Image (cartoon, rainbow, N blue to C red; front, side):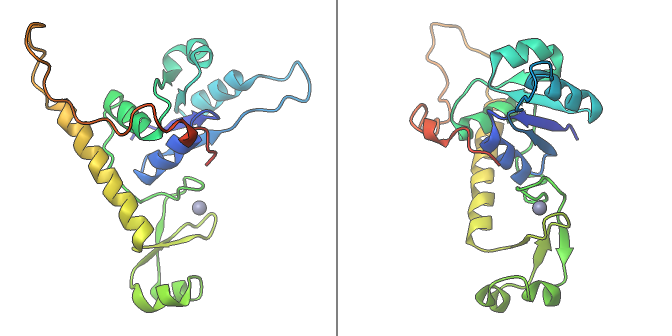
Length: 197
Ligand SMILES: [Zn+2]
C-alpha cells in the first residue's frame, strides 16, 4: 500500500486517511530557531525519501519544490479533499477502514474484552463485546455510534468515488454532461480546514 505524509495544511484530511486505513504521517509546521535550519519543504522531502511517502499539501510552493514527491490538493473542504485524493491516487476508502489509530497512525490490534473493560466507560463495557486498541497511545475503540457514523461516511464517500470512476467516456460537448454526484456543500465549510490531527 502507498504511504503518505500530510503537511500542516491538511490535518483533517490526515485523520480521515488514517480512518480509511491508509498509512499517513503528519508533519506540522516546522518552527525554525535559526534561519539556516531547513524549512518545512526540506523536512517533508526528507520524510518522503526516508519513509517512502508521498507528500500531500495544499501549498503550491511546497508541491512545486517537491515535484513528483508531492501531490497538490486543490480543495479546501475536507470531504472534497478525501474524494479528490482518493480518486487521483485510486485509494479505497472502505477496504481497510478503521484499522489505524486516527491520532497517531498506529495499526490497531484486537483487545481482550476483559482487559478493555477497565479502560472504557461502564456503559460501553456493559454493551460492547469487541474492542480494538492502539499499542502506541493506549486508546481503545469499539463499535459505538461515532465509529459507526465514521464508517457510514466512508462508505458514502467510497460510493461517490467509485461512481465517478465508472462514468462513461466523455461525450461530445454539445450533449449535456452526465449527472455528477452531488458535491458535499462545496465552498461552504472552509472552517473545517487546518484542524491538526
Ligand atoms: Zn494511538
